[in-house]
Amino acid sequence: MLKENTMAPDFELLDESGVLRKLSYYRGKDVVLYFYPKDDTSGCTTEACNFRDDYSAYEKAGVTILGVSPDSPESHTKFKAKHHLPFNLLADVDHKVCELFGVWGKKSMYGKEYYGVNRTTFLIDKDGMIRKVFEKVKPAEHSSEILAML
Image 1 (cartoon, rainbow, N blue to C red):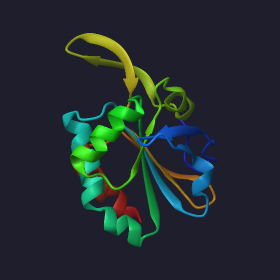
Image 2: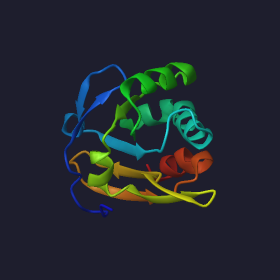
Image 3: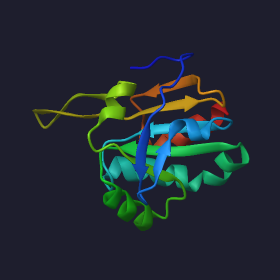
């Protein structure tokens, strides 16, 4: 897992519209880079909708929100439209960026082990420095938790 007070590595991924986005495009702005397991699941929907509901506060603070999961751009398009999400969702279908940030790992559900995304958020400053890492995020409380820090 990447640590606080280190530079966020640059990467490029397709968003829900098929547009290539690079993290370095957002230099000069603070970025909430949140990694989540899967589009349209209960926890991920709660987290995304809370970011949506608080979006004007993020805009006012000059903060860009980017969601990242292993879902395809097509899946992101449906998820974004269904829940009226005003921010970009990035498709890390081969989970290379998840691995780069250290959020891809072994998980367990109903006694079955598998690999997936550990819900984690990185608050990245205008210069590309990781200022805060939020691990084991609680979806219902997370947006408020970030806004309290801004």
